[in-house]
Image 1 (cartoon, rainbow, N blue to C red):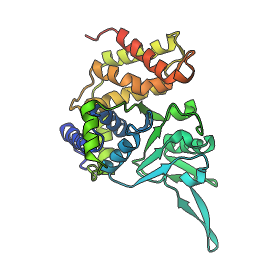
Image 2: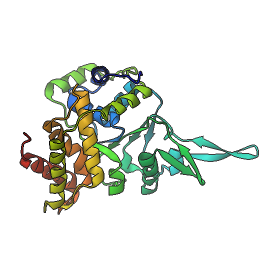
Image 3: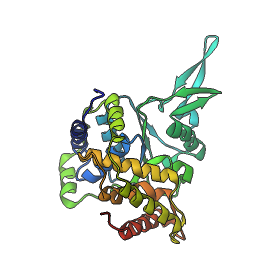
Image 4: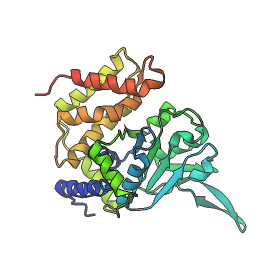
Length: 311
């Protein structure tokens, strides 16, 4: 991809990728758009919803259009860190590192909460630093490295809840939701999906990611974003508000959303739209129990509705 890539060209390429994914994920254009926002922002995506609504299909569809090397990990309770990262193996008279599936451009981690805490923690360094350490040696992951993880939120048997530090590594957490009636009918008639061919290549995704930094974020809108973050820290419905890392994440995904929609500038609606998927998993609601996720989403939505208009 040329370093002189224009915003309009990048937007069109992303539209082509979204159209390709929509052939396997029917009736969910907003979900696909948010997933692509996450990827071009350089972050990792957590898709959380009940079984059978297309989480894995979305992850596999995204991996197909991104090109590069993709590996899938089916998370289970007996999965070891070495199964994910890799191991040093004795070859003749020396040890040789055999890389695990984590050394790929796109890693699909299916049912992440079925992996043990020890294996989950093995992903932390990789997702945050794009590095892994094995026997005192540090190994660098590819420049384009994206984890697309799925999660079944309402299952308790055989699962291990993701700690806050793990959740914070995901730039966005989104839900699939049930399809509408016409989309579900189309799925019934389609049968097994045929996954698309690669639309983008790793160097293109990296170039588009750099273009995100050029999208204008006006000072008045930055004030709106900071007001939102500050309010989460003061709202009595939350035990813990959004961190500075959360503010940085929201700032970037708003720029990425503007780029995908062909704009060189952020508008207030971008902040409003990305607030829940970017912030809800980074705050902690009071007295929510097993419904913490849904309560946090509701609080963030209420805060956004009360924000004053810009201009």
